[in-house]
Length: 197
Image (cartoon, rainbow, N blue to C red; front, top):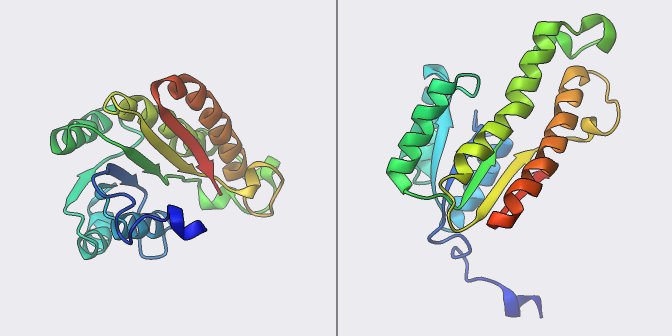
């Protein structure tokens, strides 16, 4: 019975255009998602931050037919302006965004949350791991006139304490709250917004 509703192999995402953020190497969750999207026929662009990351990610992108690599620093408005201008120029519109962007200072992830968390580290984790999704949603929704999908990555550490997750757990909890608010705002425009773990 389930096969009655199955799409032909490689056709589920045919004709869909999207942005994948956060591929760092072949072990990245974003890479696994991008590989499956490509296998289903999606056309994609990848973002990267810095030349070192570009050198690592470009061969992966090319291996699945992704030729558009766009520099994007989620902490810099000018960089994000340029990235989304390039995306709009390349695709015109978007159907989906995969946001797999997160960062926390590794020294603040171990040991005591109270003792090891600094103001700078806390704000950095929140900016990169949570606010960036709000910013991406704002920019992407402007080029999703026909609706679409925004997906971000979360983790169990957002709901309960996990040893050595500390500030990232707080940032993921904020990301989940942001996801709900973004969904409320963009749902009426036909844009689905989800955090997956």
